Image (cartoon, rainbow, N blue to C red; front, side, top):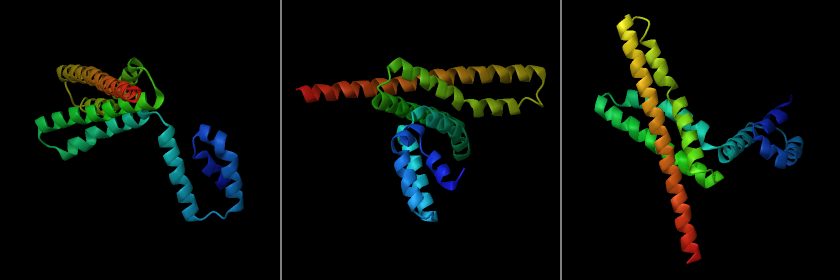
Length: 182
């Protein structure tokens, strides 16, 4: 596998099917410089972002929010409100994005948001599990109970936030259609 073929593989498969031969021809004629490689990688990242569904990005953002907010906010109540607010903004935006870009149904979006919320709970589950080794049996039971409650509540909240974003995007589209037809 050559450097040129690796650069081509940085693009999404659907993009390569449409434009891959053209880019391969251009790459065959040009000398690979650092600037050209960075330009191609930047354009490939942009295409992957543009063509991707929001849910993998959403899940990563939800995973990072715990650590970012936990280290940024030491006050427990401020952390809770920021955690819920960040979850809402991330999933509301992803839900609206999914409906506007793909025309997905609102229930499909809510399900996908719940799955992203579940993936976003992985760091929380890991933190709970890290607390277990030195815990007594009663403490372990309490930790497992809190972990289960946290995950169920967060996945439910994720589905609600994604549904709200989907409904807002659907309502916005209907509103714009009404303006155009008037």
